Image 1 (spheres, rainbow, N blue to C red):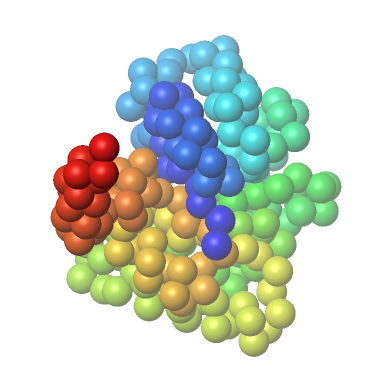
Image 2: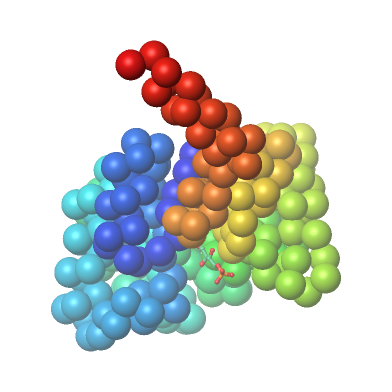
Length: 217
Ligand code: E4P
C-alpha cells in the first residue's frame, strides 16, 4: 500500500518525506485555503513547491464544475509538473472530464466518492485513482472501511485498473484497516501516519533497555 500525505502544508510534507515512506501528496481546496494560498499565481507556485518536495503523484483539485471549465483547469494543472494528478469531483461533468483526461494521457483522481456505484463509474471513465472518503462516511454512522472492502472486491472481480485511494483518514487504525481490506493508497494527515509509531509497550521496553544499558558503561 502506498502512503500519500493529505495536506498542503509544506513543512508537514517535508517531515513525512524525510521519514522515507512518502509516495505522494493529496490536496483539496479546503487544505489549500487553510495555508492561506490566494490567487491563481500563488496557487500555481504552491503546487510547484509541493512537487519539488514530493517525488511522486500530487493531486491538485479543479474548482470548475462544468465540462469545459474542468478540462481547461485540468490542462493548466497537468502542465505544471509531470507528477500532477488532476482531482475531479464525482459529478456528471466530472465523469465526462475524467474520460477526456484518460483519453488524453492525463492522470486523474476522482474525489468525493461515497458509494460503490460512484466507484464503478470512476473506474469505467478510466480514473487513475478513486477517493472514497472513509472518515466522513464514519461521521454519518456508516462504516467507511466496509466501502473500501466492497470497492476492492468489485475492482478485483471486474479487472478495473483504477487505484483505490482511501481518503478522509482520521487515525492510525483507519490506515491499518485500509491495508487489511486492500486499499492501494492511503492518504493521511501527518498525525495519523505518526500514530502508527505508537505503542505503550515500545515506550516501556525502550525505557528499560536504556536503563539497563547504563550498567554496561
Ligand atoms: C483527500 O483527497 C480528501 O480531500 C481528504 O482526505 C478529505 O479529508 P477530510 O474528510 O478530513 O476533510
